[in-house]
Image (cartoon, rainbow, N blue to C red; front, side, top):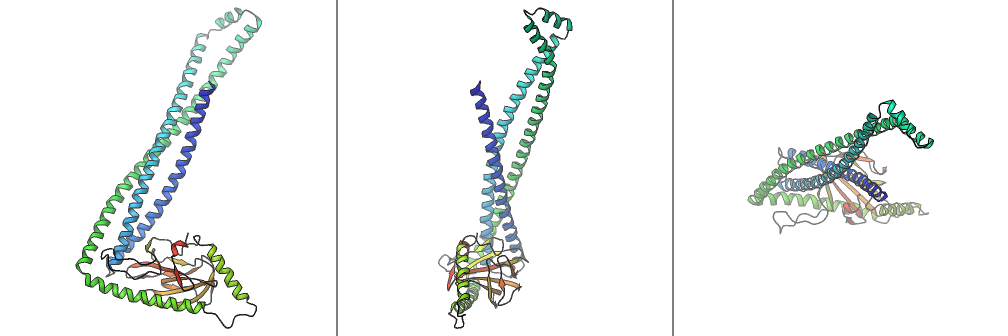
Length: 396
C-alpha cells in the first residue's frame, strides 16, 4: 500500500516539475520568436522601401538573405515549440487520466456509502442492530457508525465536487494547449510560404546581378570609395586621439582616470548594451561576394544594424565625444572615446544630440539613425587604439 502511494506521489511530482519546466521553455520560445519576428518586420519594411528606389542590388540581396535566415530560424523555433506543446499535452493527458481514476474511486466509494445509508434508512432496523450487539462497546461503535454515516457522505460529496472541479480545470488547460499548438502550426505554415517567396526574390536578384555585372561593379566601386574614405578618416581621428599629449596635468590624474575607464570598458567585454536593437545585416571583417565568389567586398571594420525609421542611437559605455563629422554614404558620425584606449563610432545618423567635448553615460542618446537609399541602418565600429575590433564580441 505504501509503495503504491509513493509511486503515485512520485508520478505527481514528476508531472508537476516537467509541466513547470515546459512552461518556462514555452516562454523562452515565445521571446525568441518575438525577437525574430521583430527583426523580420524591420527587414520587410526596408525591402519595401527599396522597391521604389534605385538602391544597391547587393544590399537588397543581403537584406533578403538575412530575412531568409531569420525565417528559417523562426520555422525551426516553431518546430521546437510544437514539440514542447506535444510533450506538455501528453503529460497533461496523463495527469487527467490519473485524476479521472481518482474521481471514479471517490464516486464508487460514495455510491457504497449511499447504498449503505439506504439499506439502513429505517430507524427500527438501526435500533435492532444495536440491540443485537454482543456488548456495550460494540453497541457504542455501531451507534457511532450510524451517527457519522451522514457526515462521511457529506465529506465524500465535497471531495468529489472538488476533484471534478480540478479535473475540469485540467481539461480546460489541455484545450488551451491544443489551441496554442494549432496557432503555432498555422504560423509555421505562413512563414514557410513567406520563406519561399523570399528565396524566389533572392534568386531573381542573383540572376539580375549575373546579367548586368558591369552595373554591379560600378556600384561596388562607388561603395569601396566610401568605405575607404571612412576607414581613413577613422584611422586619422583615432591616431590623433591616442597620440601622447604635451599638456597633461603634472599630477597625471587625467591619465590615471582614462586608464581606469579603459579597464572598466575591458571588464564589460561581452556585456555592453547594443547601441540599437535590430538584425545585423553586415558583419565585421573581409567577405566575398555571395554571387561572384572570387570578388572580395570592401572590408567592414564594424557592423551594420538594420532598424526601424526614427530609431535612437545610444552610447554603449561612458565616455567623451571626441568628434562629430560627416562622410559621403554615411551621413553624420559620432566618435566617443572610452578612457585611454577604446573608441566607438556611430555612423549613418540623420541628426546628432551631442557635441564635441560632451561627457556621455551608458545608454545616453547620441542621435537618430538616418534612412539612406531606402535603408535605415546604423554603422557601428569599436576600436582599441588603432585596431578595429569585432563589435559583436563586445556586445551582450
